[in-house]
Amino acid sequence: MSSIQTIHINLYILLSSVLFCIGVMGVLFRRNVIIVFMSIELMLNAINLLLVAFSSYWNDPSGQIFVFFVMVVAAAEVAVGLAILIMIYRNTGTTDINVLNKLKG
Amino acid sequence: MKILYILTGLGVLAMLAEIFRFKKFLFPKVLLGLLLAIAAAVWDWNTNIHYYNNMLTFDNYALLFSIVICATAFLWVLSSQDFFSNASNQTDYYALSLFALCGAVIMVSYTNLLMLFLGIEILSIPIYVLAGSRKDDLSSNESALKYFLMGAFATGFLLFGITLVYGACGTFDLGVLGTYIGSPESITSWRGPGGETLLFAGILLILIGMSFKVAAVPFHFWTPDVYQGAPTPVTAFMSTIVKTAAFAAFLRLFMSCFVGYASLWNDIIWTLAALSILLGNITAVYQSNVKRMLAYSGISHAGYMMLAILTSGDMSSGAVLYYSAAYSVASIGAFAVLAIVEQHTPSLPSPKGKEEGVQPSPFGTAGGRERSSGGGGIDSFTGLSKRNPLLAFSMTISMLSLAGIPPLAGFFGKYYLFSSALQSGYVWLVLIAVLGSLIGVYYYLKVIIKIYSPPQPSQRDGDESSKLLSFGQPKVASEALGWSITILIFLTIALSLLLGIFPDLIIRLI
Image (cartoon, rainbow over all chains, first blue to last red; front, side, top):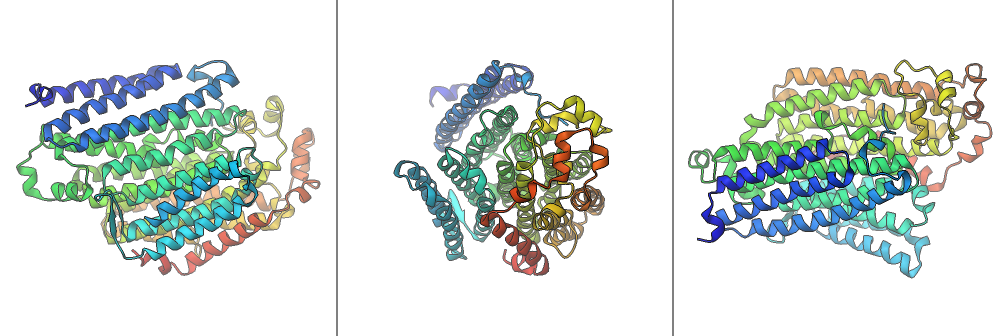
């Protein structure tokens, strides 16, 4: 029995759910785009933690492989996201999400 | 699988074109490559091969949706030649859109939840970039950021759902999951931690994630802003190819895999569909910007297509295929015309005060804002039939097809969806859907009436630029069409009619 299995699986589920919810709250309520990006990362990392825990629970490596894919995609996504943010910063001089209210109706 | 190789190769070729300087020939090469991809998909017909340890399966369902996606992409490239050729970095645009197409093909052919996730991301990330491709335009920036944030947020929900389903069942494979979920004895002797609860929560979270992607109603709020702010060709891409791929993925997942728990998600999808149809159509009535109106109508079309997920019978995949083909053809036609009209609408620098005097809108918000994001107001269509009859006719056909007027393709799309829902006993939902499409006819006809109404100079004497716009005499020459647009217009009209007159061509294939 590996050390990850000494803790009951329900505790991993609880921890990951709490982390995921904190991430969701961050995306919904923070106004600085960089902090919103960080909250999205938090959501994804909560998922990674849970995937590893389940992978160990099932003795099945595919969950851990999935984590690599999530990491790679998250890196690619953040690269694009930060590029978009820089573009906006050049045009408006701020990273506050409330500046973006041109499109309404 | 060949189709995926061809699309990837084409994308790499597009990037090489920048280095080896054969940009000029890229446009015909991409068109040819897309035709080749369609041919490859036809070649693979009925082979049903599994790839990469059952990660991808190119069965007929996948091939048909791939063909629809590639054909739509063919039309899309034809329609957006201006977008490509006017840009300084056109090769990047080609490469990005081709890589997005790879993602779309993966999304329709996955048989493993990992591939679903990868497909969605491969499709989305290039489109985040494309949506923000007008770097100096603040509305394009805003659209890109909103699309990015909402996309990443939705992916988070989808991934959490996938993780919980994995926790409950211990596998990502759709086939194994399907047998696991489908058999009642496995439910009683549940092996996973937390029992069925994990699976329930997982399915619900995946449902939320997919609803974000297809823009069904409580999760639709990003759509109008993103569609309006992005460059019009990119909007066309988002509303046709992305939507087709997302629905194919949605349907594949819920039809083949989660159908054993249909009692759990049926009511939710019922509500989502009803809300999307009603809210999408009613809000679209109040829009004065055509792009925004098409965005809301896209939401309502997502609602119609959700009927098929609800019925999930033999008919439903054929119905979704037909509907998405009809919808894509009509939308590409509409967006192509819109892009041309937008280009030739004089941009008004800071007309806020003036604007409100000129067109008193009962809903306040319409005034100056829409203009600042590059035109596309419904008034720019006034008198289009005089200025360019071909464009006007094409727009009319597209609008009628979207509204579902026989004998155009949109009518039969709706007919198949509604009749399969009726057979499954969803009478109330079909009533709502019919009511919704009646409302839809109103705002589609509004555009057509604008096109065929003569310009009214008397109301607009005060506004110099509006005068230019509505008289439009000097504009006649500049709205002359390139050969690719002319071909596109004839193709979309022909396809709308052909699909409408011979609906059996497609619907019997699946």
